[in-house]
Amino acid sequence: MELRLLNYFVAVAEERHFGRAAARLHITQPPLSRAIKQLETDLGAVLLRRSPAGVDLTPAGVSLLDEARTLLAQADQVRARVAAAAGADTITVGTLADSVTRFGSRLAAAYRREHPGIRVQIRESDFTDPTTGLRAGLVDVAVTRTPFDDAGIVTHVLRSDPVGVVLRDDDPLAGRDSLCLDDLAGRRWFRFPEGTDPVWRKFWHATDEGPVVRTAHECMQSVLWNGTVGLTPLTHTMPAGLTTVPLRDMPNSDLVVAWPEADPSPLIRSFVRIAATLA
Image (tube, rainbow, N blue to C red; front, side):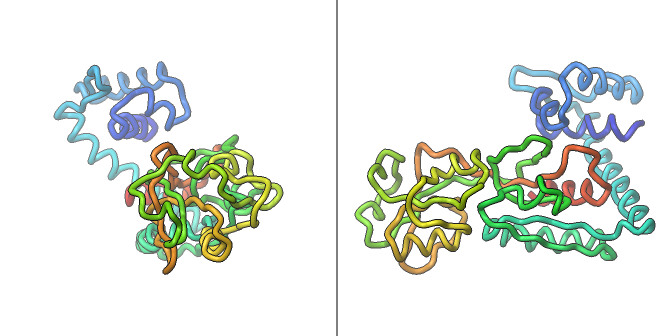
């Protein structure tokens, strides 16, 4: 069996949909379907059955899924150990300030267990660059939030968090169960530094006026001191004096692992696999 075919099978099995799996693998559906058919022929068993809802695993497919994950993990470990032996023993991880504290602790522990000899360098970025240096080649892989201009960058969603508005406790809207963006019309918003990714800037409704904020902490302090409106994933803990109210018409903010589309190294592939497994 080819590892490539097993990787394709795992993607379809996890996504339960050929279209989503093809998008995740950055290929079209026809070669993916042919690859699965080839794997079924090699094994002499039907692994997947299409259904109106997507894809269902057969008993043989369920059995293969666990084995395939184990084989792919072992292959990643072999690649990483060979890379370390050849001198490629460092990986630089980009993080977005204030976004990955709890998940980042679990991820660091899991990566250390699997790669105890690898040196991990951390580069923390602010809101100016949500790719955290990935586009500039300053980091190898990133744990950050979308959306941003992802040309040449691959992302895998780790968690999707609802978004709310940050208000002072004494704000007239602070006691509401939920709000719409229209409820905030006329309020003073924040702005991002010059040069901030425009896709990211639009998602968070940054304006051309108001105080400049570079991190979630600065955003909260701006609300506390200036009474401006801020937005945040509802997973963030608010300091004393502030509260969050869910926004009904605001899309979720996705926590993702991101890496360069072109030829990721074994250490990057292993990092992505570990992050996806933890999530």
